[in-house]
Length: 386
Image (cartoon, rainbow, N blue to C red; front, side):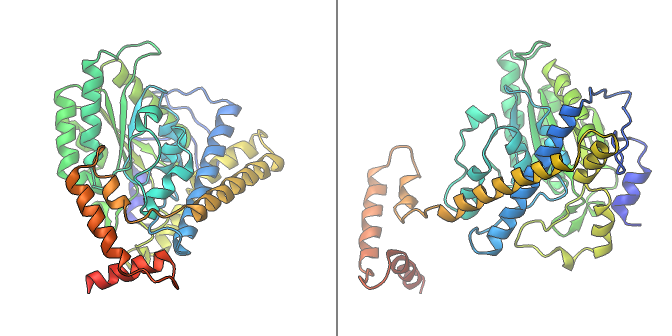
């Protein structure tokens, strides 16, 4: 058996509620009111997120996106955590948190510009309470602690509905970065209301987690003097229950908390990666048996809470979302070369205006009425490089 499955099967500290066969068992430390409506809504969220994620992969392969970062296999870890956030809470993602974006009300089409290379995301972080994607590994964790320290200074903690806290998301590879260590030091020292949510998907690109640490990742939290919890990251109910508990701890001034969602990356790290070069097919096949969506479907079916009609309706809704996602991507307009200068400062400086004018004049020298402006710009840039 592979190392990751050995770890999850042998861990006495793993919080789990829903088995791969769809059998529900409440956890004594993390109670959750499980209703039919709740489970069906979680199932729907995971299906829709997976569907547009798969469409993003296809769009990149077809040349519509420069890159896509898949979340296949991590739907439960993200939807469970995302649904634990209240409207006033703040979330700081890395670059794979499409499910958290969905839970925060960010339309999936607003992610496309990032991976097409034409914007940094078109949502308002202050409005959605969901920060911009962060490509620098682990940097968002420092930002999250700073924001949480501000929440504490603003006096927004408490046990009422107006209280708020912060959750930040990162992978197992990011735990080897100094930024994450520094963030946990600051968070603990200042008792910041922040949940450190690590999605341990077993691989930091091509390095397995056992090469990064001698102890389980959640156990590292003890060194900072904060609670650490390992949850079955393929169990959406357990992820929701643990995340709700952790966020409530932070809102009432008992933070920080670290959560390790023990899951698996079923696809490549990004579309520029080839996981077949560093992991065995048997490993992926073994984790398929723990699919987060299938276990919820099994629970609904075996308890007579949903029938084929319901599952077909969710699939149809997912296909409609994917079609809208694709249409939006194909219809995106690429900005002109002036964009290089217009988005540097809120108010453009004279120096930038002079540089823009000189550059556009230079490009005009390559304009040929027989070819498109896009081709002329590409040719000018190629000529400039040569």
